[in-house]
Image (tube, rainbow, N blue to C red; front, side, top):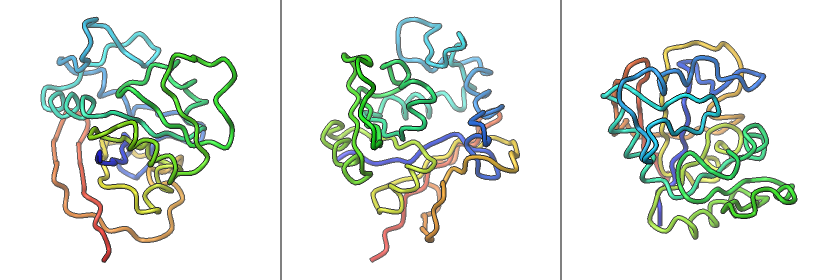
Length: 205
């Protein structure tokens, strides 16, 4: 089965956006480098909706390309789906998206897109595993990601840490209450204005 990785860009004080879902300068490193990371033929291809080109520092490029290429399925919450309108049916990585939601897919919304709506995090990961095969399942951090971590379904935690302090906002680990131990990071890559970290989740016997 594919590895389940909880992932997001995050401030040094642990926030993925402010209270109004504004990411501020968190994603600037995606567009401020000199090395394109997109794997499609169009050099200006991007999913940001802002007409920007994904280009990072050379130190980050190999890591980001490898991460994106490994993803088969993205698991996200309904709030993020509504916020970005599901990337108009064309996710930034992977071939499928599983949305955790008590509401169904909007009627008539991109029927060609492989988006699946389930109302439970355990069912979401089960569906994602069916779709992903051996490829990675990328879980967006935040409230839904923290529920999946709390359920013991996350294998790794990946953080792209940006040197900015938000002070308050939407937390990477959502409202998680219980303690969860991680191993020492097995990936530590210093990019330009970002530090890439990956930790395996320690299983409690």
